[in-house]
Length: 427
Figure 1 (spheres, helix red, strand yellow):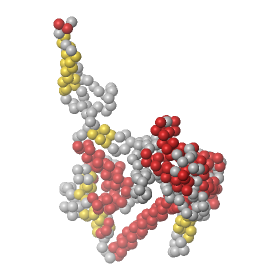
Figure 2 (tube, rainbow, N blue to C red):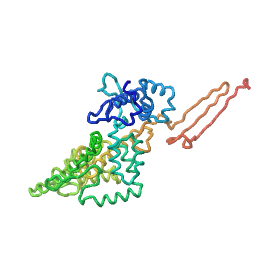
Figure 3 (cartoon, one colour):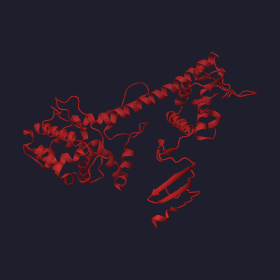
Figure 4 (cartoon, rainbow, N blue to C red):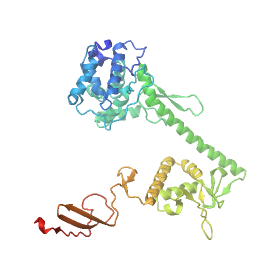
């Protein structure tokens, strides 16, 4: 623990990863690596305590026996140092497989000690973005979030949204933004022309002057932005491909008629029921599922026992008893806007129908579809109880009505008769 001799200076140093020191930063010394290793040791032995408690103690204690003193204080004076900073609920720690012989816990980057250069880079970036806020406010939010840019920025955005200065700055920033279809994005992201046909705009990350912060911004800002642009491009390409395919099928007179709405569409936008061979277009499938989920056609359009969409063919005499294959129906739903959410709602509704059909007494969460079997279920039948206390015998016949939603006034005792039998010798 010789590297912890000057641990009072650790609040001026830090590391982006546990035991990993960036060679490109001149202020990355042995103190940072040793402090982060000590932090990992403490997290391994005390996984139920938040890492900020260990950072505070490593900053306050120094000397070769610093780690031993901290462990002794945490064992004997836990409430004095923790002060309610527990992990709720307690989570199991994950061990680092790359540690040198020691099975130490993996500490998130945001909970480790930070380099002084990283703090300055984060401070400068936040100063430039939130000019309407005072520097003391920015510094306080940074200190509360261990100088993490990713965790500090949302808090500052919420504070700036409630400030009139922030709203005025946002209005002026909107006026200065170049006219175009580019949506509002991160302040450190600039949009450049690709030089291709259509003059598409591509995102580019501005350099902050610090490698660690640039990597963090790329992981938290650029990757989600690029993935969103890819999904948008895929949707546009798919819509264009469907349109071109329909035009070519029209010119080749290869359109087919839907047996539900009797409109013409391409073969690729058609589904066939399992046994009847009726052809249904994707548009009718999407409308049927949407009406079943948000309307009153659940029993008519959905077979809740198999989870399939029923055949929608308009027959003159009888209805078709077959169904549409699930993968084809899901492909039709996913092509519409919000199709993934509709599939999720459909599956949740099917699961709810299965739980209802099981006839099990259930307890449901009021905030999500989660349900579990009620172990305290009392069947709606007559139960006999006999309570013995010395020579006094009570016989009770209690009829309890179900369902029981809560233990209280909902418990209805329909009949209760007590017949005490007292022995004459006991009086």
